[in-house]
Image (cartoon, rainbow, N blue to C red):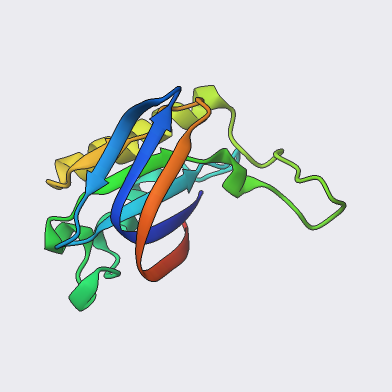
Length: 144
């Protein structure tokens, strides 16, 4: 499992002209979490990823989303699992199929909410337009 976590002032996901998830947090900052689920991820990878999203101290003042009460926009992104070592066309062979990945993303969202974090989401499997106002900019790559 891989994720790109970006500190943002605001972020949104639009599908077919409709905003399906959005966070607006110029004072506390928030996290846009693009998460790719892998075909061979460990059973507990989702728990590790949720913990990292909640607890990594990447917001102002070295605070985490959980510490700051900051929101998270969680977006499934299978393309993070793309393999680009050979040729000019990425291979998606390492990405988990939708029927495996969708419940994993749902578990991450549920765990974050269980920690008291406000979570907005994209729409799994949809063509999404993701917009963000990055803060810093501050972006980290995370693997679980």
